[in-house]
Image (cartoon, rainbow, N blue to C red; front, side, top):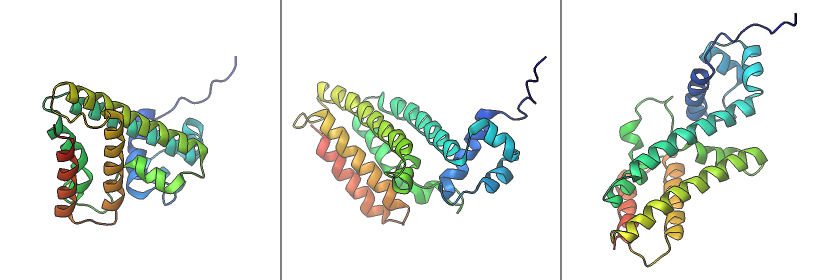
Length: 199
C-alpha cells in the first residue's frame, strides 16, 4: 500500500489568514520564512509542502486579502444613498490614525503595497494586482451606474471613468498614508472628489 504521508496538522485557511496579517504589516521582502515559521507555529517543511515557496505563499495571501475586501466593497455599495458609502470607502486610508494604534498592525492596502514592492518585475504579482484593480473598477462602475440612473450621481462622465478616478484616489491615499498624512487635508480632498460626483 502506498504511503500517503502525514496529514497536515494545521488548518490551511487559518494559517493563510494569519500569514496575511504578517505580510501586510511587514511587506513581502521584510518577512522571512523563519519569521513565518515562528509566528505561525508551523514547520518549515509543512509550509513549503502546503503553500510552495515564500512568493507563492505571499501571493495566496494577497488573493485572500482581495477576496475579503471585495465582499466588503460590494456589501458597502449595495446601499442608498450611494455617495456616503463611497466616502466611507475612500476615507479608510485617511483614518489610519484612528484605526491603527500599534506599530506592527497592517498599514495601507496590501494590493497597493504589492504594486509598489513587486510590480512590474514579477509577472504573476502584476496579474494578481491588475485583476484586483479591474474588479475594484467593475464594482464601482456598477454602483455609479445605478447612482446615475437614480439621479444621485452626475452623468457628466461615464461611470467607468468615474470609477477609474476613484481607484486612483483610494490607492494614492493608501500609499501616501504609509508615510504619514495630514488627516484634515486628506478628508478635504476626499470630500472634493465625492462632491464632484454629486448630481
